[in-house]
Length: 150
Picture 1: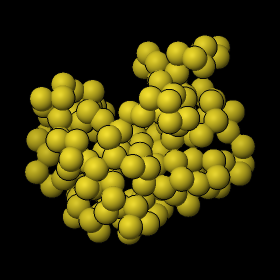
Picture 2 (picture 1 turned 135 degrees about the horizontal axis):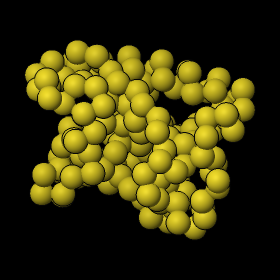
Picture 3 (picture 1 turned 90 degrees about the vertical axis):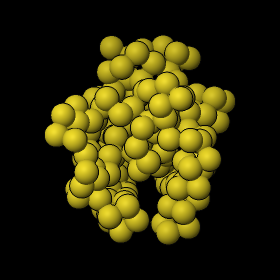
Picture 4 (picture 1 turned 90 degrees about the horizontal axis):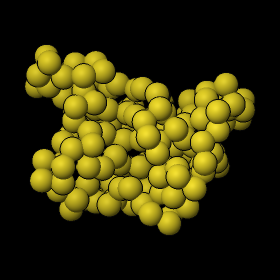
């Protein structure tokens, strides 16, 4: 069931009305954009966001899936090269209040990530208080670097 788009915080961020990330958009494509999640405890937690409002993967077009694949390929390589991460996680749930809009979380898993944060448990690193979060200045700097490398 389609939620009220006026309550969609992702739509508000995509439109620029109320941005979620303090950093600039890393990539702005035809159908998707790449942003840094915020607040988050780990630099390199990115989000690939569909530019139009849709709430289920089956609603995506072949063209949207095509661009998504290209973005994922480029983004995963950039994260690995930049952060020297052990591996990368990608997930798509789009079921949290105000975030039913299709988006993919891309997490650069560091080598020293504690076992209790492996897999889906890594979501404990996101939606934290601003005191626990990576400083917004570090997010801004990282987004600028990623945009240059794109």
